[in-house]
Image (cartoon, rainbow, N blue to C red; front, side, top):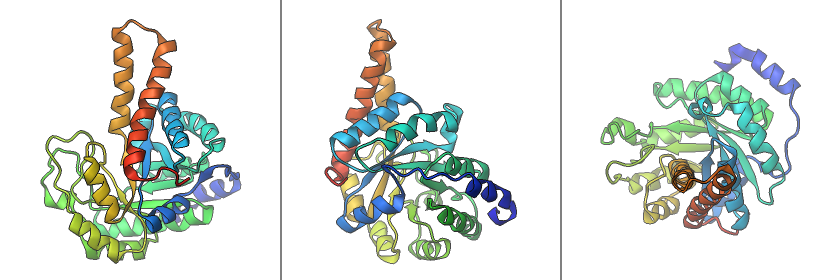
Length: 298
């Protein structure tokens, strides 16, 4: 529990430096998205090419953007290393950029992300019992808000395609969402309505009616995880029914690796691979931004 580890927060406040510029919080961009019924893409990245491609896409389309990494991805690129790529580009960007630490699983990593300048964090306690999820996320949210950082929670764990039809894995209950939002004080809530992380083995069964009921029951922006692989109509229906933030990784990740592979086949070097990878990620991100309806909303 965070209250029992106050040394994290003492160090965090003592070493806090203002990192504004174009770096904003989730609350700053999602409030407008909720009001005007559009979605904002949240793209995870693991290297400079992905970071450059995503921010270039948002700048060209004059769209706010959420970019960062997830705790499980830090084994590929350490958090501090990726931050040194993210922050300079975000700070000088022409559009609002949220630096978001996605699916934070450990208190230590979440605090590290905040210390490094991330403006938003997700504390993923979705696999814990409901009451424990509330207690832990409420504690984090209290301290993060004092620091000026926004928090995303998750209720109703999004599947991984291992068991896509397990009811307990893929659906968030309306009454649970209402209480969770009130008790935790989170700024955004990821809900499970039938999506799964990674590539889809079969067409997902989205419960849009349930999503609409959740949207009416809670006052905070809703988040869709497991967004890669959904159809344009799926995204639009979700946004129309309350989704404001859509997580995307697989699509931009595959776009990047495909660009590398094509260049490898053509026996080309890094001087060609790097710009081609940036352009591939940019194109994939632009496609999502256009579908989400955030063009011109920066």
